[in-house]
Amino acid sequence: MAASLRISGLDAGYGAVSVLHGVSLDVREGETVALLGTNGNGKSTLMKCVMGMIRPSAGTIEVEIDGVKTNLVGMTTEEIVNLGIGFVPEGRRLFPRLTVNENLLMGAFRIAARSQIERNLAFCFEVFPRLAERRKQLAGSMSGGEQQMVALARALMSAPKMLLIDEPSVGLAPLLVARTIDSIKTLKDGFQLSVLMAEQNFTQAIRIADRGYVIVHGHIEFEGGSAEELNNNDIIRELYMGA
Image 1 (spheres, rainbow, N blue to C red):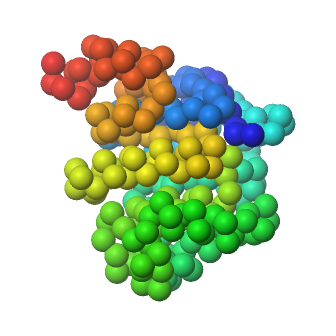
Image 2: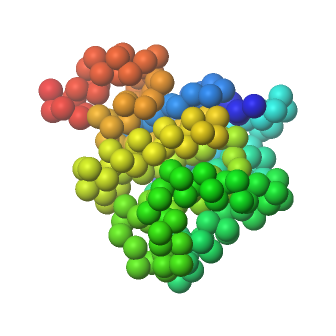
């Protein structure tokens, strides 16, 4: 069973700097939801709130996994991961002096994932055959696209029910962006995940998103119930198409 997420009235920031203002959104079971916005509008801050890296000043973050509801506010990142929530951070944040294989095994530290290591490794290498070829290579010596593959696969090694992905296209060439987005859909379908993806590349994000939200200056300015609704929205046109 996949997970669902509901964020309500979330305020958060850094010290005296307020970034998120009354943000509410939800991810239903089995969905891929895109959080769209240009740089500096609060996407990464919201992701870090969900993962317990930033404590919000107001609001709730509730996840339901296997029928059990939990408010994530106040929990540590380790506790949140142990619930079954995986995270691919912006910039990948790999262990550069460890091999590909060692990075992937680091992702399987939570107890619930350890019995599935062989199966999950095999699936990750099936989706990313390049990693199978380079499993003994140091992660820090790989290209940006290859490192993004490692980051995605490492998150899947934790056997999550929900996956949060922050800016998967950053620093990648256009062709690699398309491949990365395609691989996210493959992983989502293969593991029957719910996915929240923060992304500024609108065109690529809506290829795999069931629906999405547009965040502007820390406010949710638009909720699109489908890729078509997002594509036809005036805010989207202004932000991404210069209309």
